[in-house]
Image (cartoon, rainbow over all chains, first blue to last red):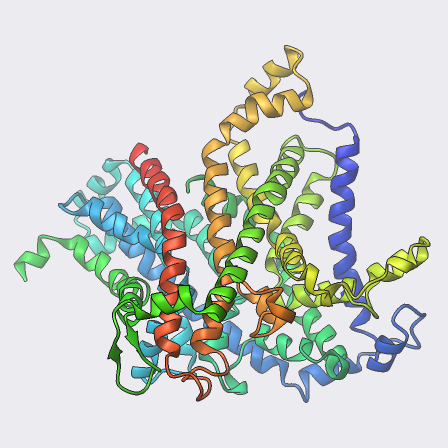
Length: 273
Length: 307
């Protein structure tokens, strides 16, 4: 068997590295149950006591759920837009033969080269003139405009589908829309799943765009809240700890449950690129 | 109407095309146009031709910051290309051969991908801080206490800390990409090589690596674009100035500082050319990325043609 079940130095190195990541996560979680004075002056000592006070403060007075709500709203909005727009565009590009199709496909690829930062000044001016500064809509629009990668993956998928599929749907008298909604889009769901995973991570952890466009505390997202805590550790070490845990552990738990599917999805996004 | 009805694909493509054009493509061209003006973002624009570019490359302070930021961004790229990428291949190969506990290892290595940057930086502080850091405690415990340092605050280490954190957070993605590409190799080929007596690493260099050429090239381009545009780590660690003496400054942060920093028209009142100079830097960054990124578009396009 070419697969290696034997434990070698390489295996042990890999375990150590993985163990280190696990340690960091556990260390963070462990510290989130300690009081601030205990954390700062007795960092490595035996904790005086474990407490849920930090969590009570985070979800109570610090209004953590508001930030979760803001992040979730942006995630759902942007994800919906990305999936709808990119699958439609990709279907148009992959299913139909027309003049200029290759040009248009290339045009959609341009976005791969331009990270959002480069155009952010004109985007800022656009959003300002639309009166959308400091709204979630602005962040949703900007993040969902980056559809190059989804359009690319889905165009490849639709172009590969056997022509008979389209033909038989046509013979059944289904309109283009019905064909797309009832037959083609459901077929693409594994690709859509990969796209959702990749985009969700990007959107959920997005830092730059919300930083620029969401000024009022009431609209801000989780990463911005955590930065507020970590920028002044002497005063908010406890909140930084507990907010990090609250923001990280549930997402990771979800990941571990779906790990294999998620990683397969991500890798299928990479191989074709 | 009949013209449209004959072209149903237009209905499918139009909405995405519109949003994509307005918020992804138009801004690039608009940035080029704004970069030819002296403008604070509010008052009237004054056309100055290439004066902003001349200023960027001749003004001592601007050029100094530019060189420093570009140097730091390139440092990140080189470290990623020379250290992270081989590590990703190494990890991917071990997981591909299904070493013991590979599922757990794989999930662990990938998981920082789901952690947002401020939390990653905070974890870095917990490990490397001068007072509360685990690393110094560890040094003390093994009798190397004299080497304890406030690692996160040393200017000479600034950019390496940024790289270290970014590498830890991002190493899993490339690994998964490589793993995906490795899984396309037929198991029979690997089996045959084993029977022919090829060693573990021989199989890697002679069979696996040649199969991965395109994926590696792709990863290099992605890494390059990432290195040129990485922003979060430097901003969170070093603030808008990019750390002590700009030790953590990178291209994207330099751009942000000029366009939206404290003395820009939008953020403050001092600078009268925030938008002009900001877009100029963005256009220079664009040129730096464009050259390399064209390669990737060519690869993507070709792989799509082949299908």
